[in-house]
Image (spheres, rainbow, N blue to C red):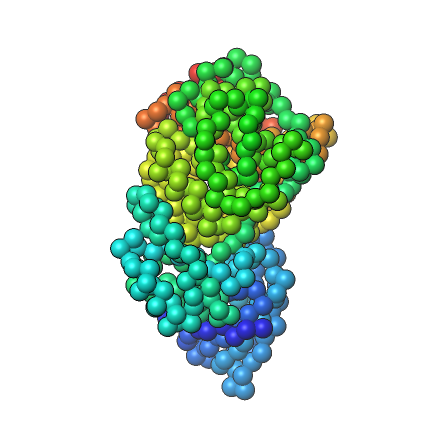
Length: 459
C-alpha cells in the first residue's frame, strides 16, 4: 500500500455529509482520482465512528478497510488492489447521503502518466520542472493540429509517487492543459473476434432497397482499431491511414477486429455505407489493447487529415476507466463537426468513452435474439443512445463493436444525404428513426433499434 498525498482544496469544493450541523464536514478535500492499492487519508471537523464504503454505478457497495485515529477526526481507507476501475461514490456506511465522487484508476501502464501541454511550452523547461517534482519526461509528441490537437502529448514516469499526488503535481505545472494516467482500453472482447468472424445480418436494421451501392458517397469513416488489411469487401475504398502502435501482424490467419468492424461499416456485401471510404487508424495492438495515448493521437490525426464535416469516427473500444485526454479530443472533434460513435460494452457498469455523455456522441449498445425476442446484452446501468444487433440466434460471436459499426455506417449514409447537419442533429435523426416497440419498456436500449429509411429526411 502507498499513502496517497492529500489533494489541494482547489481541486474540490467542500462537501457536507447531510445538512449543516447534522454531520461531519470534510476539512480536507479528498483526491478525485485514486490508484488501486493506495491509502487515502481523510480529515473531518467532527468525530466519525462509521467505516466508509464505495458505491458503483449499479448500486453495488464495497466496504473499505477503515482505520480511525484516536480522536476519530482523521481516518485512513484502503483502496482494494482488485477493485474494478471506474467512477464511484464515497460514503459513510449507514448514511443516506454520499460524501464525494471518486474515480478509481483501473487497468493502466504502471507508473505512466499523460498530459496535453501547450505548444508554446519548452520541452527542456518542462523536463526540468518534472525532475524537480520527482518525475521524469519520457516522450514529447507534438500533435500538430488545431485547437486541443495543437498541444503536445507528453508521457511521464511518476517514479513510484502515489497516483493522486503525481497527477496533482503534473496538472499544476504551467502549460499543462490536462493530465491523466496512461490507461489500457481494449476492443470489445465479448465479440470473440479472434475465434471466428461474426455471423450477422443487416435485415434487422435495413431493407434491400435501403442498402444502395452509392450509400455514403463522399464520407470517410475513420476506424480507430486494430490493423485493417486489404479486403475484397472494401477494395480501393480502404485508404492509406496511419499506424500508432507496434503490433505483431498475423496475415492470412483470421480477419482482424478492425477489418470486421470496417466491413460492417462499408463492406460491399455486409456493410451499410457501401460507397463510404475507410480511413484506418491502428491504435490497438494485435491482441486488442488500446493505450489512451494512441487513441488521442489517432483522433487528432484524423482531424488533421480529413474534413470533419465529412467524417465519422468509429471507436469500437473502451474500458472501465475514463481518460480526460481522450475526452478532450473527442469533445473537440464533435465541436469541429465530426460525428463520433462509441461502443457501450455490456461487461461493465460504465464503459468509456461511451459513458462520457458528450453532446452529439452516439453511444451504441448490443442486442441479440434470445428465445425469439431482442434483448440487451450485459449491464444496463446506463442507457446508450440506441442499440443495434451484435449477435444473432445463429452465432455466439458478436458484440457492441459490430453494433457500433452498423451505426457508423448509418451515420455515414445520413451525413452524405444531410451534409450541413451537425453531430447533434445527426444523432437526433438516428434516435427519431429508431424502433423501440420490440423491447420491454424497462429495458435500457435508449431510443431503440437502429433503423435505416430508404430516403432520410434532413433537419
